[in-house]
Picture 1 (cartoon, rainbow, N blue to C red):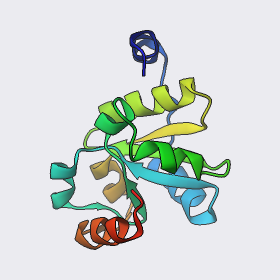
Picture 2: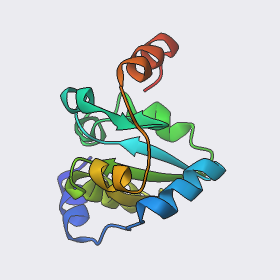
Picture 3: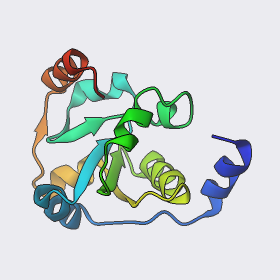
Picture 4: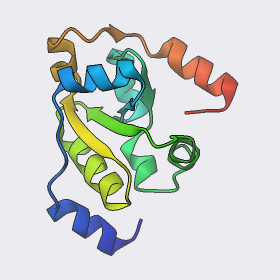
Amino acid sequence: MSLISTLKSLFTPAPRTSPADAAVRVRAGSAVLVDVREPAEWAGGVAESSTLLPLSDLQGARTLWQPFLAGLAGREIVVYCASGMRSGLAARVLSGEGHRASNAGGLRDLANTGWPIVSPSAKVTSARKKGTP
């Protein structure tokens, strides 16, 4: 990502969605849920059915993000992080690149709406076996 793109994304409002609305779209299959926290943060739990893709990879080499984005098939990307700040940045970056993306806030916001929080160990292990994020 270029410096200009990064600066633009900092000053563009992030599309926002409520965790409840995100749940409806994810369960319907029209959206995917992505946790943009860093791997060390996942140990405390992740939202069920989320894909684990760190913001640092989105802003860097995109070794995980690139194949993920290529396989979206037009679905919306709903992102979350710990507090909603990094997911806001991710939503702005992705929207700026032409993807349908929105910020669902923080993990606690999802948990407060009843979204199940699960251990990431099985998700990360199965993703590594499949070679996907």
